Image 1 (cartoon, rainbow, N blue to C red):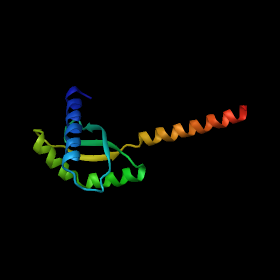
Image 2: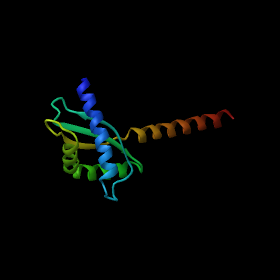
Image 3: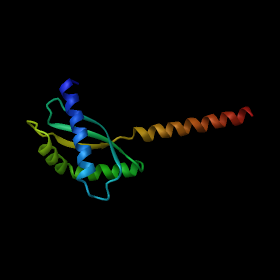
Image 4: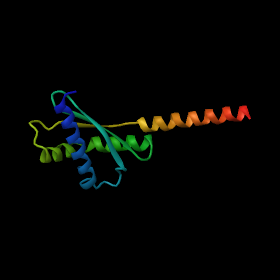
Length: 119
């Protein structure tokens, strides 16, 4: 990924975060944290990865809501950033943190069982 793509990814994350914080009034949208963005080499498509407090079900629900409103986000992005093409936005829920918590739970359970065996 080139320097320009990285810079555009950062601008998009910053701008969409601001839009979510200040413009989105839908109470169904949870507490969203944008993690990263990946813009295509032609700068016409961007995938924004996010996480949300509340687990996988909440993440899937918010993914549907955000993708349904992607036209709104694209329009707001066009107003705030002066690109030749405003990229088409797709939101994807990132389950990395949930997977980490699950692995930690399994490891803690395993270490507790081993300590009980050694007692």
